[in-house]
Picture 1 (cartoon, rainbow, N blue to C red):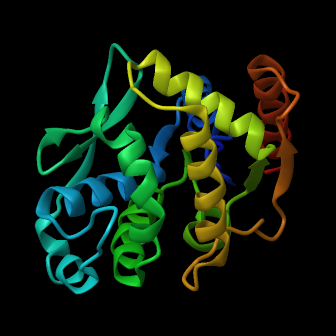
Picture 2: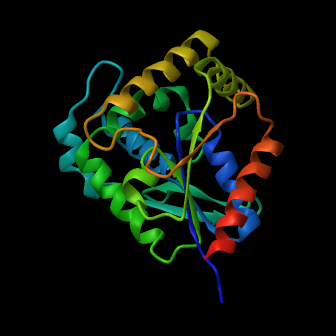
Length: 231
């Protein structure tokens, strides 16, 4: 019998959710979905259209034009995972900027945006064999996921990781700005009314502040193997 499960990975920003999810999906031969990339793409769309900036947010304009934002993942074989496309344009690099990071929690808090993207996510995962990471995957998108993981780490550790990542990409940012962004995103993500970031029922919490990527992968892969043995 073909054993297939759904793995839902939630947690705070810059805890390495996407990295571990990609590794896991590749190892298992599962579909990988970065739900955060979808919210970032919607944020980029809002920025391009002038609906949002650091000083204003025309929420109704975004809501009225949601159907004009086409999101899809296209598999990049050399990279080994799917990249985010907004209206048929590859935006994988653009959506990782600090400017997008500073605004994405505001866009993510809009119920109409979440409804649109959750519907897409549910459709992608209807046949299981999927690893999806985000903020509400175990608590909203896949409440019946066989394995739910909640990743956390100190704000300082996460800010340092994010800062190093941005510097490597050539971004001109300061650690202080990145740290401020991490703390603010935590506040917005955990306090929004619609689908706040919470540890889902039955989720296994992993604090990776002191874990190497190799050790973390070993721990999570073991959890997956245990679940597959149980079904």
